[in-house]
Image (cartoon, rainbow, N blue to C red; front, side):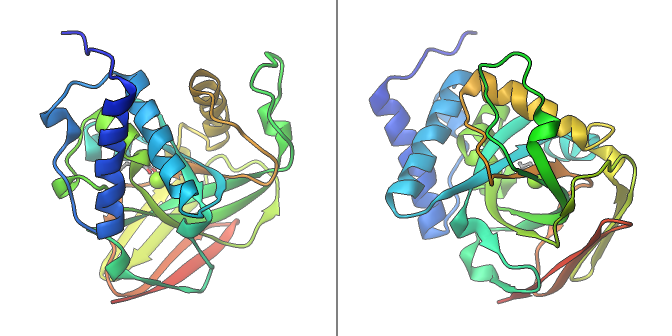
Amino acid sequence: MKAKMLDRREIDVLAGRLDDARVQVLDVPSLADDVEIHIDDAYRIQDELVARYLRRGEALVGVKLGFTSKAKMAQMGVSEVIVGRLTDAMSVDDGGRVELHRFIHPKIEPEVAYRLALDVDLDDPTVDVESCVDAVAPAMEIIDSRYRDFRFTYTDVVADNTSAAAYVIGPWQPMRAIGDLPVRLEAGAHTVDGSTEAILDDPINALHSLLEVSRRRRIPLRPGDVILAGAATAAVPLTAGLARCEIDGLGVVSVEVTA
Ligand code: OOG
Ligand code: MG
């Protein structure tokens, strides 16, 4: 069955539902329960959702990839890379504090972050995205699907800005090859071990996947933007206490989680 394309008003209504869920910290049912959504419309809903964040005073600071690792694809039953937007309201300082009451049912996951130094010209077929990046860092992402029980379809999660809720970035290092580095995430009672290789065989590949999606979806990549390359392991529940991620040879990032 082919999804019927949505009109402007329908896009607005669905974005409004997801925006209210985030503001009120209350989950909503899958959009797919009501209407079949085409992937183009899912990105349109995301655009409108993020436009609402910006109208309330948030500023765009970067982008994130999702489902770049098999562990995440298996955990969520989705198998294609997705892209969402990061705003300043989602940023938490390394060593800082984050409060659980901001979120519906948060999870945390270990990530690699890159930083863009240069504008990436999406219309230049020869653009070298790797050379536009000047720094890399260990990071953690807090995801908080606005959907009940974290249950969603591929188009649902794209519309919901890929569950983006908060992120923390460790000390930036000059750009360097990452390849296969051991990763450990300790969050409350949970410890997960993995490797940066789980991110598309090498997190550098996330930059190329990002460029592809950004071109198709017209998502600008600007100087200073942060790029979260995607989780290296499955996500674990976020609970009160210290959350800490160490990537061997790259560094440590931590955050204190309070009720
Ligand atoms: C979607 C977000 C996925 C990642 O790193 O793979 C993601 C979700 O799992 O709710 O951020
Ligand atoms: Mg993530």
